[in-house]
Amino acid sequence: MDALDEIVPFLAKSARLDLKVVSLSHVLGLTGSVDGIKLLVKNETLLNNLLDLTGEESVAKDAVLCFVNITAEETGAAVVVDKLTERLVPLAYEAVLDENCKLSDAWCMVLCNITRPEHLVERVLQRLLAIEFSLEKLTTCFTRVSYNKQKCHLNYLGPLFSNVSQSKAGREVFCNQQTGLLRRLLPFVHHEGSIVRRGGAVGLLKNVCFDSSVHEWLLSEEMDVLPFVLLPLAGPEELDDETNEKLPVDLQYLGPDKRREDDPDVRKMLVESLAQLCATRKGRSYLRDHGTYEILRELHKFECSPEGDKVVLNAVENVVDILIRTEEEIGEDNLKQLEIPDDVKAKIESMTDEVEK
Image: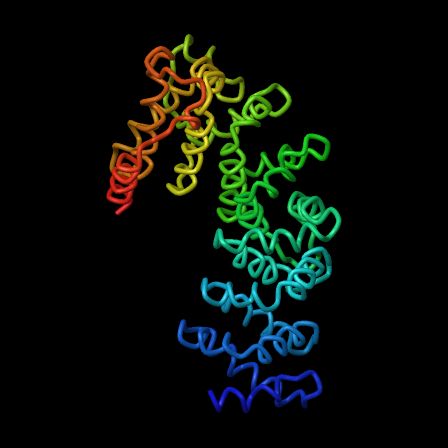
């Protein structure tokens, strides 16, 4: 710790540039290991100096990369949120909004990292929402694919949106019918250029589906989210005319070149979105009437093949098990209002953990 204390003055803004460069290089090296990160986050002065240096062009890249690495570990992310949220979040936000910033992608990753742990989301989101129209403006950056003129892609805004939608306050912003943010982001569920961007959009959709109070709106003609969920799950299988007529227009008569989503984590989130939409009687009826079971039937065959995934298979079977039952058998309008005994919950969680292993 003594050696690290000796470096701190050389990371001050007033220090000579050559000393800052060497010291930053040493700190960046330490961020490459868990032990190094644990050592660094104990020194609050060092962290504040690092944050100061993110605004100094000659050393900004290494300083921001230090924060990318530190916040990648949950321990580091927690300390950064505890000690630096008030300064760091506005800095990162302004950097992302700056279309000429060369470090926007790195700052996106920092924001993504500090919102990934569920226990940190609320504090970071509160600071973001203190900035007027912050999520609305970040959505604009994200939806304009060539927004940044320095070749930053801003793909990690996708996981950021997914992370903050873990919070009810975050979901409310994205579900605001006046601003239409969710509608603007839905097309990225099918984005082929980046799995990070696509996965983030799907994660946001899954989290929004968690709130059964917006299901009627999500399935309305205005939003029509079902095709966005089902299309990536559909493959090249040929379906009969009767089935095609049930399906949303975008899923009817898909050709032999139709490719199913190849990332199992994304497929799992999409199936989990369907599971959430099954919470209410209206949602279940809508899914049945629009060919959801038939798409899942073909997906089930795929997940049973060598190309499939056991975790996704389990998720598919859970949804199918609900859809094939009659409402009389289910006997509950809203499944989320059911009280599940603790011993049954424990058994379900144990079975889920076993499947995921």
